[in-house]
Image (cartoon, rainbow, N blue to C red; front, top):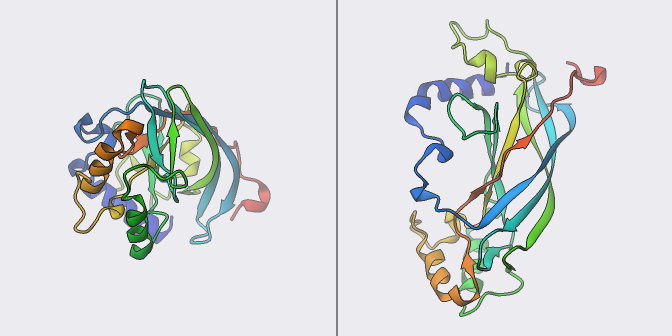
Length: 246
């Protein structure tokens, strides 16, 4: 078990009681959206982690589609977006709870330079949506695409690595233990309006986005909140290929 992973698990155990997963929070901060994200997740390969020989990357290919199931058009920003910043692995397809959550990985924004976001804000600050910066999904319309990513796990659980490890570690911390779970489900969170696109100082209510929502209302509803996909079944390989064993 790599040192980085040990540190991560310690932090999770220490702070888990005080941290609420977004899907466990009240829906007030994530209002319902007419957009639905669904698809299929397939393990496309395994490779030893470049960070630690004790970890392995599970390569995952996603075939996804957004579907507008509402009665009005939805406007989504497409300039380097959406990003899929959060990958969530659970033991069942029900609501995400502390008991069902197995692994969670986070990613950052695609654009890293403040100048890029500042330029994008300037381009969007117009009376009507720019065709080359947004996509408008009509009611019933689908937007399909493919995505490749990975999740990293220790190959085996080392109970001696840390004294008196919590019992939950044996369930969530290794590829070996995940294979013993009857069913696995993956969810991905898509982000359409990162806070960094707002003018500093950043505010949770997204004032610039809300302004454009009102301004562009005649063209549809500007999507600001993230969307979590429907759960997708995920099947792990039965064994590591011999050429990928440490």
